[in-house]
Length: 88
Image (tube, rainbow, N blue to C red):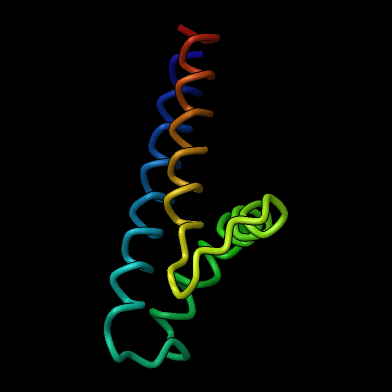
């Protein structure tokens, strides 16, 4: 079980890193259609889209700011902690 938790922890860290890279890329004038930008977008969008939808359903109008990466990282950390408490 410890191996499973460690593998899941590494996966969550990689996803969090991709989300952070996507945040940084959103501030730079880089074409997101290049292979690197497309890869980061494709890896993070399945996680960020439900968070964006959740913010929309709750009715939080964030204006020009996208808080879905913050919500996604928060959910990943919560899930990781819950799994850690179950396994360990």
